[in-house]
Image (cartoon, rainbow, N blue to C red; front, side, top):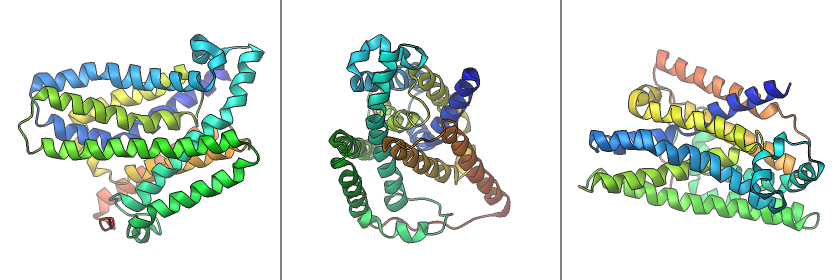
Length: 314
């Protein structure tokens, strides 16, 4: 049973990481097209050391260790595989805070996509909400206020975790906006391949945070996160160099990824409040959501264009 659970989690993480990183692959492909072959090969091969081992492996381990200092570095790595009652108790006591932290981050991520990002509309209300981009900040502020109000008297640390999750979102968003502007500038500049490589590594690391935070909805096992998200990152590398034009045709995959983010955020917030959610729900629901939007994308390819949202109002 534990083996089956591990396989289901790894598959779920692999699909989520692959789909959530489509934007990253497109940006990478655009920048790589301006670079020499040697530099492209260096990024696609050696860049894996940063994107897979450091971000998908070390980052979740550091987060888990920081949330549970009593476990120590080894305990944070193996806590989900141990029978130590003290280690399990420490993990269970801090799990709600990690889940609330990650849930708020993911919820804000979905809201930003829904209100403020260009997209191909498919679900009811998307066209209307895309025209309301300036209201994004008001919406997330009210959501955060409700979460803090609901948790402050019950557990102040849980309220702090919600605020920390929102803070991380805006920090990451700032890095992304800066990276987007830099990547646009590179298309019209003569900067060296070394400068472009550094930018690619920053973009790749920044986009990877979504997958790492979302992975906690599936499991707290660092090895499983490393395997599932790591395999997804390697697939994104292959898409970047070989199949990016094909992937761009499946325009609703991004929608599927973002509705998966919404689903994962709700699961994480619910578990943060102490509600029990079956462990199989996150990976299974995510696969179903992505499959539905993949099917819709295939229908669009076969039957022509569908609705496109207007550019978000700034």
